[in-house]
Length: 235
Ligand SMILES: [Zn+2]
Image (cartoon, rainbow, N blue to C red):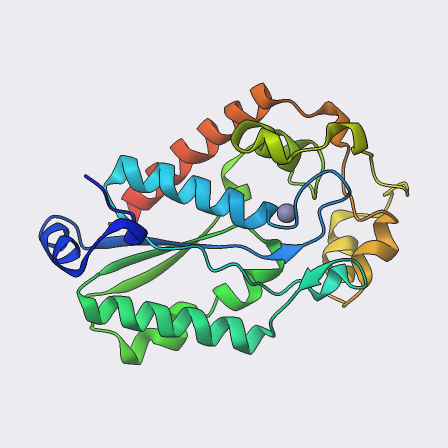
């Protein structure tokens, strides 16, 4: 059954709604991912996982929301929206979808800097949505054992698995700087606009040279299985 919103007419949507009242919205960002990965990396990953999970669970899959909050990458490439803008876009989409009859909305997020906004979408939509509908948020990197990076081994492996033609391994380089501080320190430091290039030098966190398509496929299968199990637990 085709459940990608891109491909459906109004009548198709109504027919399928009789069978599923659940939907996934992928959310990404447009920001630098070193010199070897496209700026759309977070969008591509969020959308890919959403489509795979949506196919397995037979949920509707909505188009990716491509703009996120990524001021930390300035002055390197980023097209960012303010936290209030992203919140408004997502809340409006969720309310609209719920009014169409969708009861379970799962947002699958591909970008770390969106987390603060996503935490409050459910709260901010609660009064405007039917009582039997709900919004859930999934940050995909929480569903793998490997530690998350930025244009390092994890993201590069996943891109090699899903869009190998967009990866320039001949340009792949590890972070210019040695990252010796605690993760907690970096977590706070990266909230500041412009912090990411200051911390990493070249905008890369981790080492993409260890990446492979095989690792990417394994990561995706681990992530997808864990996400599917968790979404089913939502009820
Ligand atoms: Zn990324």
